[in-house]
Image 1 (cartoon, helix red, strand yellow):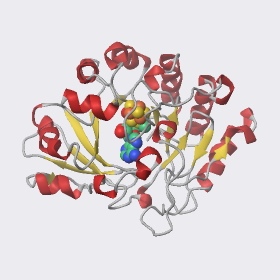
Image 2 (cartoon, helix red, strand yellow; image 1 turned 135 degrees about the horizontal axis):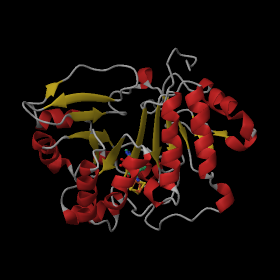
Image 3 (cartoon, helix red, strand yellow; image 1 turned 180 degrees about the vertical axis):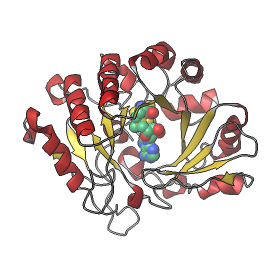
Length: 320
Ligand code: SAM
Ligand code: SF4
């Protein structure tokens, strides 16, 4: 469906839970979050219904995210249900995960119809990984990556949030993973929202730093609409390197997405507190819910303007 600024909105992100088995410093509060009442969280059937309406409106890509989507009970059934929409025009069904439970689920996810997976990993050093995730076990994620490769959830993408003074010294190590492995590494600029909104500006590193540290990265043609990453590769590498730079060069012109939160709100823009509540719509009229959300998309976000106010929600509620 075309929005008011001529963009084809065809990508839906479903945050199926705000709960997580990690507490990344930039995403979750140290004390964790209160578990919401059952009634406050959308049922998986409702997510499937939204997905069906979206595909009916011409959406071709759906991503399941969280919180950590693999901690939500019934996740495989949801994946199976959404994957069945491939017959109606859905082209890609993907999942973003921290990878901790992936060794358990990769094979079943593939069988349920998942196309591919993005795995978030900010350090390859077990001590630093434990620090940024407040207790995570790197070994589990590495096992999850291996399981995803064995299950052929390709192309596999590793998402690395760059934090100055924490993992900028690992840029080359992450880039070099693409030499021998069939995976893409994507560096994401830390965004000043939720927990990270109060962080010292010194931690926010522009992605140009990646190019400064690895000057032999070769730029690849930009794919345009719907692409948030600028792609590069090392000479003779198997995988690619993506730079996702919401801060240093915003990609609103190419934005093709809307987001649904676990508590039933539609976010037309990640960087705005404007939300539509599913409870204002009849369950048999969710097409209208999606259409209103698409029509509410702003031209661009205001994150680099002086009047910008960080959004209130943490990323675990929105799904990235
Ligand atoms: N738990 C899953 C995971 O970590 O992949 C899915 C949800 S998580 C909120 C989705 C993505 O958002 C992760 O790659 C995470 O690193 C990223 N993220 C969270 N807070 C962020 C922030 N303030 N700036 C940039 N990326 C952020
Ligand atoms: Fe959990 Fe993902 Fe947030 Fe880390 S980034 S706390 S894994 S939701």
